[in-house]
Image 1 (tube, rainbow, N blue to C red):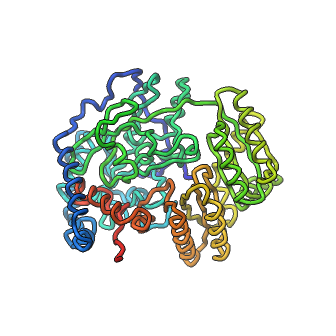
Image 2 (cartoon, rainbow, N blue to C red):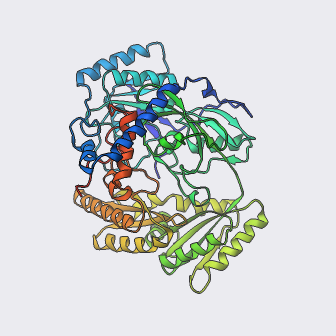
Image 3 (cartoon, one colour):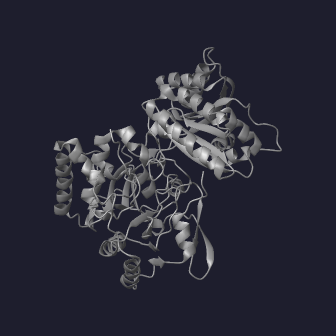
Length: 560
């Protein structure tokens, strides 16, 4: 969906830094991870957790009027943070330069072009602010030093990695701040083949990890598959998933076993050991999954790997979305090997055909399903394909044009058409820009949501296509616009789409995260008590509101 390279500028010249594979130090079957030598600061960690619990207890026991004071008084750091002045920020930059004077691999950039690259995205349309300085650490200790400087000068601090977020997650604060570019921390530290896990730094890309595992002949892979240039730290922080979620779940499904995190205090914690499961206390790893860098900066992660099984790909067409979705429900309930099942609408198929011009149309322009089938043997793959084909062609579903890839090359070709959804969608309105957004509902509610949303888009005079991870009830819309007037229409359509999803017992975001773009919906979706608990945790861990301010937590609360 996004480019697999990032453009980084130096002070003296411009150059393109392409996405390159992480360096690797392999240690098989190690008894402990490299992070075991890091001081965990248990006393401070206990104090933080105690503060969280006591804070929430106080909130719960307070009257509604008293509880409301958290969000309305000027002393609330979430609403009225006391940040440093521009002069303080310049002093902070000089101190950073002094601190890292003996570390040539740590760069400190104030070039306007560098700042703009790290504060702006062509993939979303939320307010953009450039950071004051960009620092590229290489180690956990480097991050600790950066955090200490940020705290001393009350300077907001935002982590940046793959830059693929779609809801403004890596935008700097309105006053600037420190952007911590984790691109230099892209190393794979350990591979434990027999334990099916891997330890890496947050800047390692998921595609690079899978490529290295393949190069080393290991039949393992990391199954979460968001944007191609997404990195492990951002994937964890945004609670990502992707097309494989119907088979492997999301970031919140035990794929991140533990994390080393630098807290706003500068303390370094490791959330748990490397055992596959643990019932020892809180699952603090999950505290940082989906926190979007507002509670800490992840510097090392242990990720779980899955067996790499043979796959094949198929595509089939339907009279409408409702029948396609019903067919998927029966297929999933049969328990056959489905790694991905993707719903696309007729406009997507039209866009794909346009992408292949001047060749003849590749597909009928109908609502369709793309399947990725999975099995340990050719026989199991064939049996899965047989079962799926029989179901989709039932009279009540009306599936037609079943096409099963004849070889690996054709399978890659078909699946590439699905993965190119963003770029093919832009063919529907040449010269337009695209707003990509997602929502998620219970699977049975997906047809209603798709129908109502498509009608709303048509009535609004917009051009769009829809792609859905139908096995999860998650769908994405790419809304095209050519000018500011149409952009305003797009914003309103997105708002109504989110409201529909929540009304159907769904969520404002299935996998893109909250950031700046979706935080206004959290009170409605999660409820006041849950959102206030999130804020209580934030205040306890980051009382100065320095870590990625302006993201995730709503600025206002309902009056009733």
